[in-house]
Length: 442
Ligand code: DLL
Image 1 (tube, helix red, strand yellow):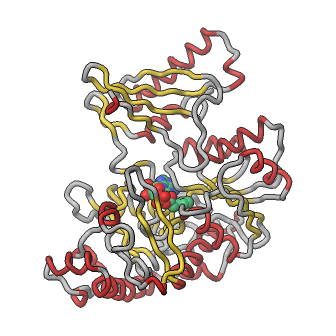
Image 2 (cartoon, helix red, strand yellow; image 1 turned 60 degrees about the horizontal axis):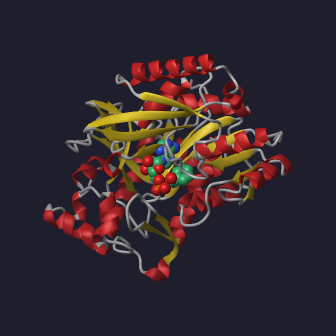
Image 3 (cartoon, rainbow, N blue to C red; image 1 turned 30 degrees about the horizontal axis):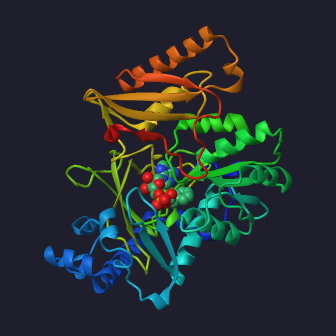
């Protein structure tokens, strides 16, 4: 018999039923929806039709789930090249919502939702909250940004449909956030993990004592297990990881359950594949690679084999929570966020793990990349806590030395560590900017 860890307060909700379907039944739903999605994209999206035609592929050639591997990939630049509405499969009269994601360069990418898409989004967010143990009766402080970013409204509609009380505070204005957190009986909070750290730090500085906060529903940026442990220790809450991206729907693609052993993908609406980012070959469950997602029910903007650039693996083993939908490992890096320091590949997430392994290190840091005489150098600026700041120089030197050693041990390359005064690393109200790349400025 399967053991269940639902007893630790996971909120069951009838919307969650598809999470527990027998696999065969789930795969039948997936195949039916995949066929309809491919047909819709072929009929209404020029780029997709021409890519299928080039391959001599017709929608009726998709007869089993594995045939998804025959379909062409979609990448971020496809959304930029067809800016703003080129990938829409519904006329504007049927589109009830637009969101946009800024990205790093130039024009944003625009994503669209029909009434039915908004209903699917709400459904997967209800399931997300239920998996994180949030339920009717909870008071949810939603500090994801409202606006073009999908985080705010995505979480809002899900929490409201669940029957929780939502406080639509959005990101920023940290003092007011602390007041609400303390005075409104908040039991669950949604925001980026880096913003929660900032918020908690400010609450402590203000002498506030938020009572009753139980759960954090955190996502939109990578954060390590070490960071989770630190956040849970500091605040006493249980911190859950949720994943999503605008191109696919926003938040609501995958969520941890109370077992916190990977994120369940809402597979009845999103078909996951893992590919080798270099060869684009599909990899088996358990192998690490780039996550590729196909939407199975989106109308306004069906996405076929979207290359997320997020690196993870699919976990096929049953989860103790009883859900049958598969899980992905937590996403700690993207295939495009790696940098090379003197021949060694480095990911920002490794830096976070190395820092947090050292006692006394603060979770506030920034990686600065520079080029000196043609050689790439990496400096890690780490904040010192207010108590440690008054310590003797010798104590601080020792901390700096331990941090340097931990970084070298984890990364395999030596880098400069600079300790900086409390509160000198910029805090983010949304996604944190961990890496400052000054190499091209020189
Ligand atoms: O960040 C949607 C979202 C909002 C997810 C709120 C979760 C909570 P985008 O702005 O389009 O959408 O950014 C998507 O953010 O491809 C990942 O690289 C990263 N990301 C999102 N969630 C996680 C996570 C939203 N839990 C991009 N862990 C994705 C690691 C994440 N990275």
